[in-house]
Image (cartoon, rainbow, N blue to C red):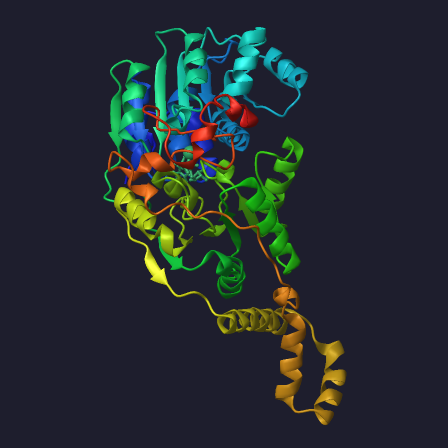
Length: 492
Ligand SMILES: Nc1ncnc2c1ncn2[C@@H]1O[C@H](COP(=O)(O)OP(=O)(O)OP(=O)(O)O)[C@@H](O)[C@H]1O
Ligand SMILES: [Mg+2]
């Protein structure tokens, strides 16, 4: 056990950590905080939900001169929601040190951000596109930044963002300290990374698997047409506290979330075509439990930290193994347990094996859930509600009516009727989704024998409709989108 005390952290941050309930440092924090304090460039790779934000946030905050009201720390993150979340975590960490943090992202009014910038934040957490807008309009000055962080570094250095990142880093003094963090770091990206850094120290928390062991991983082999019923059956069996369902495209997300609503689930969709206001309100409703199921594109795959997510469902298998790691990593965070279930069509089985191989983890096969199991699950839920009412409520006022009922019917019939009333009635509502193409089995082999590259193109969110391999020719069915660089601005 490593205490934060032994890592040479200032008293004001110690106070913040105490308030946040952090008792001991996680392995990535233990290894990278001293390096960060020593001014080293660091590439930090550790599993999802293991505290990478504080790993770069603590040394960054500890280097800030409070009385110098210039931007001294800069964090770049791939999505708006993540920029907001990281900014909030840095705010909590830097609260007692008097450090001001400002998130800057697309979809928010420029003048509001400009006003915020004029107030002199010490740290800015930004999405790349909007940050570049400010740099070009000269409404931000990052020439005094001494610590730059790329959160989700491999994503930031992928084809969709790399040029933006280069442009951003050009506006920061070369003698900066650069910190790169992610749960995944493909070799080719690591190489690009080292060109932006000064003799970086690579810290990779030792673990056989890329995914955390507290996530149970399963898969269900099924046909496309079975997916929706299988999903609602599983939801009835698992009764997740909060669940995220990942779909491949925005349209898919809309259809699945509408279908779930039609069957009586508290579900909403989130993807890059929604207004920023809508994205925030959906996410907030999910965080406070008013929405129990979030249906999302990969826009919600990286970095988001929502503590009670108990289940992640891959309604469509993700395109690349990294994406799988990040998606399922929305559950099982900070030592909690979680369950991840991926739907695989028969043609996609080779892709499943590829993910298993790359992530060095194994998914357990699960049978296609049956309606009877779902019914039992629902009844179980009604029973537990009934039991809670028995334990917690004052039932005096109901006793007389209850005994009158018992004079006329047997007790089993009455309880059965109550359970029926309490079970959701809309589950049989027919829902048909538009047809989609499975990820091609043959294509997954690719020229290089490394099928990953073929799955780089994303037909989904963030406008990543291009091959993200970074080199070589575009492959697979996303070829025609390959020139759409810059379309990632949709999330900037
Ligand atoms: N030392 C600690 N003790 C207890 N909780 C911690 C500690 N460090 C971080 N946490 C909490 O753990 C959760 C996950 O942290 P964080 O979001 O930084 O993970 P991450 O490694 O960045 O994950 P991802 O790869 O998904 O981005 C957060 O709620 C954070 O506040
Ligand atoms: Mg993170």
